[in-house]
Length: 239
Image (cartoon, rainbow, N blue to C red; front, side, top):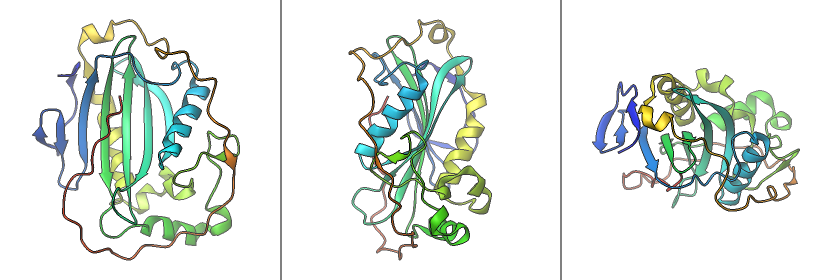
């Protein structure tokens, strides 16, 4: 059970309590955590919060594409979009869009995710060819001119390319999150809870220093791998 009392589930089919999928492979899930949120900094310290989140995602091999403050049904929250390598595969990425809505002693998370199929890297290769390798890679926007490790930061993840790649998992995750966000409603008791003031433990002084930015080699589309046994990629325990 979660405090979410309503959201637009058009096109989704329930697979288990709190988990839905659509025909294109999107996975939508909602979660409630009756614990002090594990965000590394309060929402009002947003610059430090997103730098620390980006460093954490990078240390686990992924990349925080964006972190944006906002509200769901009038409650302050954090919208994130990230990419992670697909486990057990030499190529391919999963894209995860989420809202984390923290309160003083609990949090609610809404998550939309999708993974690349057998053909991977096509969006990246085509965008790199259009903009040129010198304009393709860039420093992480939250790393003060450096990188946090993990998957590289590049222009192919920008929303401006979504219209040209409507079936790409990043496009579908971003579009679904934009569509669902204004339809979410919460139980009034959750809305009235005290706000999140910061992590339970003393906050870390800041993210680790970012590595100097060094552009990697231009991307190329990976050849289709041998079709793997079908299954969902594992949902993480984040809250």
